[in-house]
Image 1 (cartoon, one colour):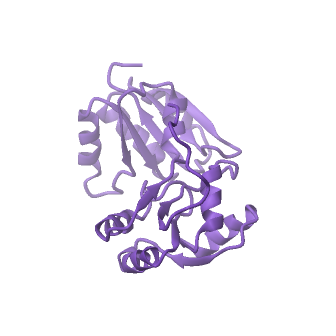
Image 2 (cartoon, helix red, strand yellow):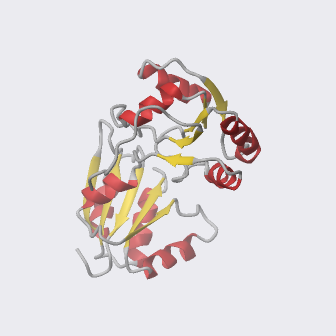
Image 3 (cartoon, one colour):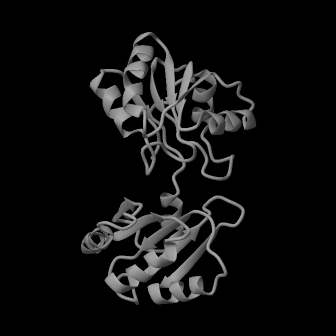
Length: 238
């Protein structure tokens, strides 16, 4: 896709959704860095985490405001007021793209309802490189995020299987083997899957094969550490 017009590096007052790296600090866009340098205020999950990230890029931190799942609704009015006052406001998460298995949905919905411009930048998110590197069908897929821990988990996974698409999950280290076992039970042990670990980081790896094959590999590990993306192939398609 070729852009028809390239905008200048000056930024109008708006709420800018800026993805940040999920591991490799080089994985941030030039425009994202420009916005972080320009922003009058940055709303972030953890001011310490974002402050440290800005230091890595040599950016003197502007006013940082904590914005997480417990207070994001209360921050909406502040963001709307600041943009209406002519300020450039950025929203970031600790890592990756805000709203993708991260807080921010109420912020964006509130900003739109409040009549301020919302600009969403492209950028890092773990499930896209996991899907692309999996070797599984990528033309049609659905991203399901984290499965429920307990209540409704089985129903959630059975619903995912019925889509008959490539399905992508996030899962924690202490539940990822259990998820692979469940996939084998619900999709069938011969369904093709890929477990991607530590995307963009030093120990990045892809475990590919049938659910039973990948489960056997994982069972041999002394421990399972890192951040995991599990990609499940469309039934009957490899």
